[in-house]
Image (tube, rainbow, N blue to C red; front, side, top):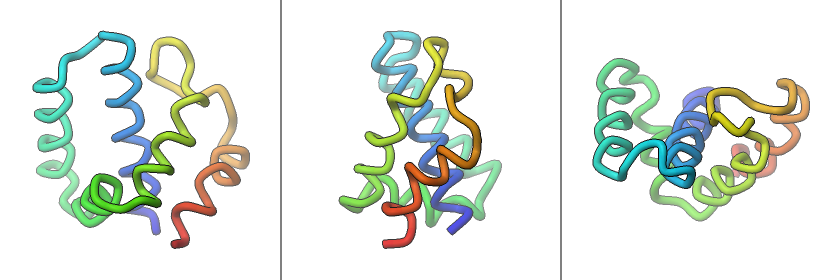
Length: 90
């Protein structure tokens, strides 16, 4: 479950950066590859996020909780856990 939650956070941050025009798609893709290369234990989580309905929905659920700079969240771990839990446990 940890690989899923870390991967949701990472992919959601990339999506936030993309949505705000802070990075382009190629840069986002490159950063995801770098994330998996440097943290190979998260590869199953990244695959889950990118290929399942629950993973995609988890990213969408997390997006509103990012601060405007996309570098941190507006809520603490307990609230974020409550947001992600229904998706992560599937």
